Structures are given as C-alpha cells and as structure tokens.
Amino acid sequence: MTIDQLQLPNVLAEKLNYERNRRNKNNSAEFQGLIGSEGYTAEDNEIVKDAVIALLMGKNVLLKGPTGSGKTKLAEYLSSLFQQPLHSINCSVDLDAEALLGHKTISYEKGHSEIEFIPGPVTKAAAFGHFLYIDEINVSKPETLPILNGILDYRRTVTNPFTGDIIKAAEGFNVIAAINEGYIGTVPLNEALKNRFVVIEVPYIQGKALFEMLLSQSQQKDRRILKQFVQFSSDLVQQTKTGQLSEDAASIRALLDAADLSAYMPPKRAIQRAVADKLEDEREKTLIHNIADTLFM
Picture: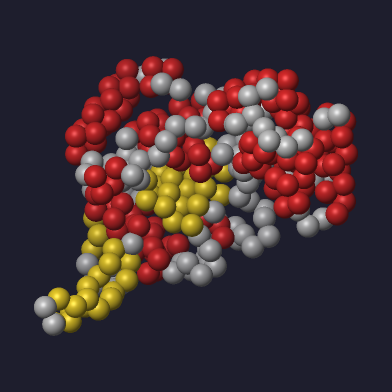
C-alpha cells in the first residue's frame, strides 16, 4: 500500500511526506537497520490508515488482536511508511526497569574503570524521536509498566531511576504496542495505561487479501494450492470462533510457514509440521488433520 492509496487528508499526507523526507536525510547508519519493511496486508485498509493518522497526530497506538494476526508485521510496516526506526521490547514476567530504560556497567579505558550507563530501548527511542514497539504488553507484571506513564502522555518525560536524569522524548517519538487478550499468562492492562493509547483491532486477514499475501510472500506459487490454504485458514478461524480451536491454531504466521513448506513437501505434511504439531491438545490436532484431509487430497 502506498501513501496515495491511504487517501489521507491533504494536511496529513503532506506531513507524512515531510517527515519521511526529513528522516531519510537524518537517519544514521546505526539506526537504518531498525526501519521496518513492507509485508503487512490488511483486508480493511482503514486499519493501516487509522494507525497512520493516530501516529501523525502524536498518539500512541495499541494493536489488539489474536496471536499470528500480523500485529508485529503492521508495526514494522508503519515504521517503513514513516521511515522511522523501530526499537522493540518483548514483554515477559521478568521485564524490569533496566530492560526498559537501560543499565549501569563498568567500562575500562586506558587502565581506568568508570561506571557507564547503557541506554535501553525506551531511552534510545525517546532520545532520537523514534518509534518504540512493545510486544505482548499485557504479559508484564502490572507494577512494571507504570514507569512509562509519563512518557506516554502529554508530558513525554520519564525519570531514569538509575541516573536521576529526566528523559524528554524528542519530536517523533511514539509508542506502538501489541496485546493478546485472554491468553494464559496475561493480565488485564491497567486502565491508566490503556487510556494512553488509541486502540486498533487487528483481525486475521482472510479471503482475497490473504491469497495476495501468500502469493507475494510464500515460496509456494501454485495458485490452486494457495487457494486451498486460504480456505483452510477460513475453516480454522471458524473453528476458533466456536471454541473448537485455540487462536494459536489459526495463526497467519503458521499458515505462511505451512505454505512455504508445501513448496517442497505434500501440503498435509506441511500443515502437520507448521500448524498441528505446535499444539498440545490431541483433539485440536485431530481436528486440524480432518480439515486438511477435506481440502488436500
């Protein structure tokens, strides 16, 4: 999708083009590799458009959807559209302030030792006015993320507890976060934190959009087989809606893996390796095999 295809209001389209040109001139080689790539396909173009509008207005964006629906791909695509480096945090129960802001270490130079602060992803993104991506934000312990409240709201500042410095976010800094609600190990997102985001639902892509994505990104180029994978995905999604399958089983990421493998092995075996064998529930595995049997003879 090009900027023109987004059909942004003129004032925002001009702002996006200006920001892209400015960053193309100013991005150093150090951060060039952090700019995301294209590759996200949306069945509804308004998903991308609304995210772009929110970011252009200085809002933080929370991408909400099932695992494997393409939230990380969307974040990378937004980075590409803005030509904005994307610093990433992968949340876990072990996430702490050091993982967010940075840590102190001892460095040695000319025989002398000194304490040096190594900035973390929040500190780097804020200092240079880059995007910050927080993946699976609701996996972290509830007491960890409130440290970011100040940098997520109008203040755009956070106090570094390790140095005492006040970190002020440079122009262009915004946060894109992703959330999978209802999964084991997740906790409800603190309302004060959630209120600092614009929420955008990211559903599984299906139908023509999914076919085009598989055709462009998969190593499998047989259109007939790809259409069967699209139908396979549709059947999996329907089963997740009725509670017969977990959302993990309908992951578009896993579907793409299966399509890739099918270029060099029978599709049903590719589905077993990329989809079924990732699951623990034998009933779910059997259901996936049954669905595959009806489509791939």
